[in-house]
Length: 325
Ligand code: MTE
Image (cartoon, rainbow, N blue to C red; front, side):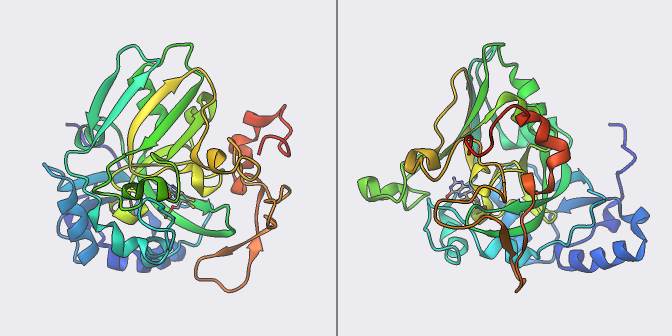
């Protein structure tokens, strides 16, 4: 295989524990030598040991293209991102998800791709990793509840998977489903007493899905995705509230009609299909004007489309955003 310009040798790999220090290097302007990185087995940290053993097979190192962080975003720490989670399949207690999520077993995980496509198929995570160029994407992430963070995700563009799936022209939406497995997910096992109707469902309009910002993420901070953040693969759509970013995806369907997503089903007065971050449209029970960044004391102003207006505003140009929530 021909080496890409951003390939580096293994001894230049930066383990997770010094990743934060590396940011300081970048600020000092020594960025040029640090433009790419590997995820690989011998990360010193306990976290990476767990992560490399999670996916069976040959995934010892993942190569990805580093994000240059041109917006100079201040990253949240690995600990913050992985210790405060929304993953209702385990619990509604954000601090407990990390502890409970060990039951999520990602071995032999497959994604079923079906609906309005040339030919339905299923694909495992390893094959996906081999097919696509992995990239780091440093994105803001804003939860509808009013907290936010900045995360260095690793993944590939959703558009490349869509091209692989070859949807028919009738396909107008793409629908995602989290795995249903009541041995892995304790809240699913609670049947009628469960917190939500499972499986968790999310969807995007096809043009939203094709936008360059939309990715399927397999990791963060140079390691495979921790269970609590949606291993082995999740959606990231950074201009939308966090609930659109569905975790632990096992099915992707191409459909003609707008699907009803889980939160809309749970409470359609409070949650809609679009869920674009918008400081001018309050949640019925709280203001969306400000947000608290994890680890920071003072709130900051929330930005329209979570600061990605330039990239996505055209998708909604004739729509009343106070109506299409
Ligand atoms: N996906 C599934 N399957 N189950 C969930 O409960 N919660 C959503 C989203 N994806 C959720 C999910 C919500 S409300 C948010 S804010 C984000 O995941 C949280 O992602 P994080 O835990 O990585 O911060």
